[in-house]
Image (cartoon, rainbow, N blue to C red; front, side, top):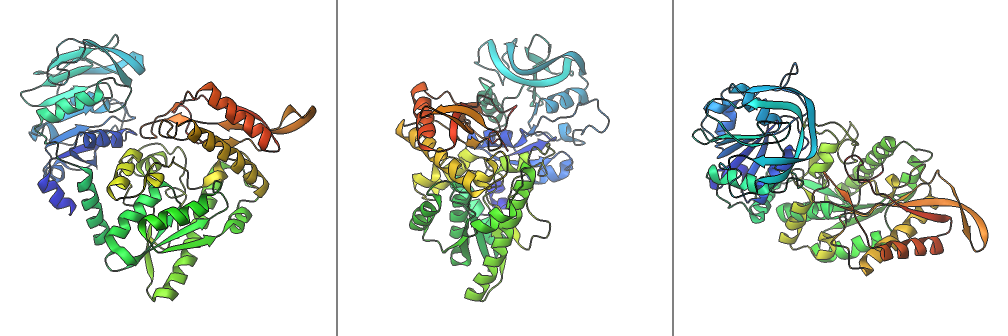
Length: 523
């Protein structure tokens, strides 16, 4: 099924991106409501938007102020197009200003959880509590709505925190309904979609069909290789591409020496058994460790790992050519949207850190990339994996970064340090499983502070060993995360086992930082 036929068969919501890190999250929430969504840049002319026949349009937030020089304007003629439109944060402010409302910088900012008071339910807030908690992120306040709009909510600092003009089907909210911290945010979005007449008929089956058709169209009759890591992202990407092009795909699993304990064997056994895919295993551990020798900067680590991955794939592709007599032109990767947005990949968002399969790729890449999951979040990928028939052991694995344990060692990467971290990580995962908490924890990095030593007492003697950091987090999408409140007895078992069973580790600490301000991985 092509994108064009999808747009003809299903209602489409366009999310106009003003550079917000949450733009994709808006699109994801719309899809949760079973309505197809597509992100378009704010620079797209309205005529091009209308050519996509949108049932509704959502204007995203963004980092700019509507008063800043060069602040992105609302596309010319958008509000006269007759398409139901919802403005969020910056989109709300731009709507209010464009249509004649009073918008000004405020001395009082609202960031994070904010109390919202409903003054008129209107359409978006119908049936919701008069007092509710929402997520704000602004210093610009709308003090009076444009003509024809009624004010439906306010906060202590924002006289107009929500407004709507039902006659023109124009709506605006200063808060972020797309984030989970807004108590009734999904209901607000559902009310907007219903008011716009959007049918909730978009399903994961359609995503599979659309993605398979897109891959077939891109690859044609050429050969492809897949960067298979054993994690859910690359596994689902490989299964999806295999469904599209079958034997034209060869999966390449690189053991870069940065894997968790027993991981290589598990990948060879579980994934091949589940899919029957053609799998080529490459032991490149010595190569990667040599390239990482003495490197401590995390960005440099990621770029080195990304570069070496590609070089290994290029060599593997040449061997596949010898076997099949056809050149490999495409590289399949399990890139997800959080990888893209944190790398600043064309979203207007700040570059937080490079990902080996996004910002860490070498400039002289010899493959065309196939990234069928690039617009999806982790929970969507898991549902996609289930739809493709992958076993739960693969679909529900905790996320593991492509650079592996190389970015969970703070300091230079050595074989000895990797062995220490592998054992500590294995203990933490075993105890989490034993406690039945695997589905409750989004991710559980264990970090070795390799360049830090602490004094301890083990066996009645003084030790001078390394500390490890436990980083269990809960999340819906990896864009935001909170530290997981593991039971004390679980933490105690993990700490006791690590300090008893792993030589040279004599201290275990727990990271209780949320995201933001911290990222999930330390590097």
